[in-house]
Image 1 (cartoon, rainbow, N blue to C red):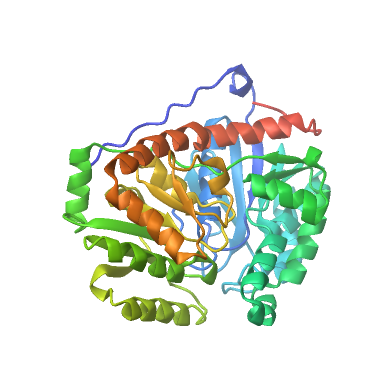
Image 2: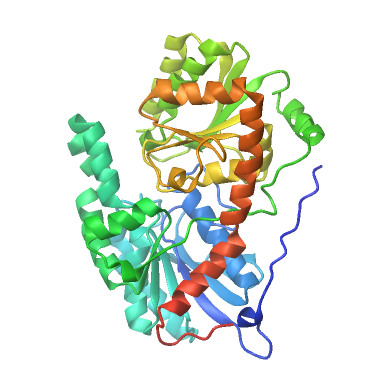
Length: 447
């Protein structure tokens, strides 16, 4: 069993709690399966849920009590402890069943009313509220006004950008996109939330540009804070340890290209199959392993899986492609470490947390240019990036890493260093606190 490294957080005087009561933060993330150990791959449950959980734990390490407010459904418990001074608070609304995030807003008036009652009964006060995605933003803004507490909103993705990209690339599906993603309602609410919140958090430079151009938000309100990763879990291991992991996963003697995520049109796994076919033609020892989360209440994802399987057969690479189910969270780090190349092939991706985790584990990574992460990376040194709408371009990028060991070694070393220097949760948490402090909003008691 691998020995995990330990994260050591350096606290200066501004973050100590000597002789003072801890501050309190409300994190709001209403959709999906928010849990201490989130079931990744379930509908609307992925990078954002991990972001909220990990950021909350690190804020607690910095001296805060953190309440994570989410929706209660599927017989989930009302309260769940995540870590010391971090607790999930679930409030029911809209019935007992799962509701897709695009239509959850219809039930949020009920949610907010119940949350206000709980907060009043328990006499809770917050230093600030941090909401995530536009559904939670509606709740966060209402609670902020009611409690006279600063509201920091983190959108994670932006409706105007996603709608524009999808309609440009698939104009014949415009009506279907509107029905599925509810873009008109989403963008209308995003506009109001972005203007009314106290601080707007962009996770990439692209988002900063879009807030200003598409929503006419002043740059004075915007702060850029990238997502983080848990550096006590995701880190490189020795060559000997890596070979043990590869043998356990059945990767020995192969050059394995991997990807992981929820099966969704915007994730680009069908394009990755096309790209891998390009790489496989040049490398007879290349194999593709995709871990796809397909558990959902909807049936619309079934045709996507059928399409991917059909593509594999059309390329004649059935014996070189494995499509597995989503991995448990505790298997993720070894999955990255065992890979020779990790791919983020998304058509649309606000950031790409799995790519950062892979880089942190020392895995050479190819990311999409249809997202925000690539603008923070040095091409050829920290990662390669390619257009996921161009399978030939993406496939050649994969093939180069598999062929040239010097390139692979450089990406492994420099990519891991970049992840450690820019994306650890301790740094992200302190950036958030600094952003609230810089806004000079009232009622802040820093610990």
